[in-house]
Image (cartoon, rainbow over all chains, first blue to last red; front, side, top):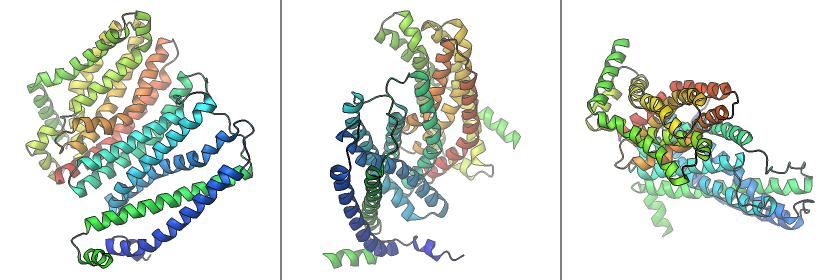
Length: 247
Length: 223
């Protein structure tokens, strides 16, 4: 099998040159999808027969929660690539993605609380899903804190990679133990209302929003990675040429 | 290989017992945290007995975490950790022995102390067996997971708080299962399910955590 496509990722210069075009495409896609999804979800989609308009926050809440979880998985995948193939771009991706993932988790928790107040009558319940989301936020904080604490760049990346792999192995255990804890300790005073199978006109804008969030995430990640690559390679000739050419 | 393990084990225990105060500190901390709760909540024994499972487990968790902060520090500072990394024997086996020695000297003492503190919190005597057993199965997991964090932060000047931040979220399953077992036993429900889960977590930790600890130590030593 031809591995050149994979080896190319080892070159920061190649990545920087290629990612410019991807970034433009992704940013446009994100803008269009998010705009379309927001207008569709907030204005055109029908009201929920029980929750009225307050359900519309799912168009932000669900995509953010999706991203929060898949971003942690991405950290671990980047960690494995960084540890096994010693690829520097994977290190960069890991450290750049962690804060985005943390903020997505925070958005999911915040929008959940805003939605919970009118629907459940309280900002926070120790529901299994909420709790495991909160723990996910703490896991992100751990990765960010570790990457900030170690001054040596390469060791910081490796340490974060190990931590995120350990975290990913633990994540299912945490999730199931939290679910078990909740069902055993707390009689169902609050139950997330069993979602009625969502009709198409509500579900499609949600899909658009999820895609938009993924494009947005990829675009922000690329922007952060490009900056980080420039910083790391600041001594090389091509970065100087790039920066001076722009100035 | 076996001889090496025995030698290493002897070395570790000897080093630990040379400084008995450091072994006693986590125990004192454990007892102190537990006795803070009646002071904060009030001496009413019925209330205390209902929160006792959680209190004992949270205190045990914190005591284990604090005792692990210095696990690799002296070895890191005097350079023996570098020799371990260079040694022909697998590093994961060496760290497993080290964590085992540490657990036998500090974790086991904590387990043995716990029934006394449980009684002081008003746990009925029939639950003490479950308390002992759940801590016996749970504290090795805490030690092994904590050692992963200790290995990653050993090179840092102030690793203590960072260690807690990294590791406490990973402790949550053990906390849930351990205090759940105790709570079930308090209500007269069967506890075998919890204990089996704790045992399987322990097997998982014994088999996987040493690899992560070894990887963490290699990173810290290379720095």
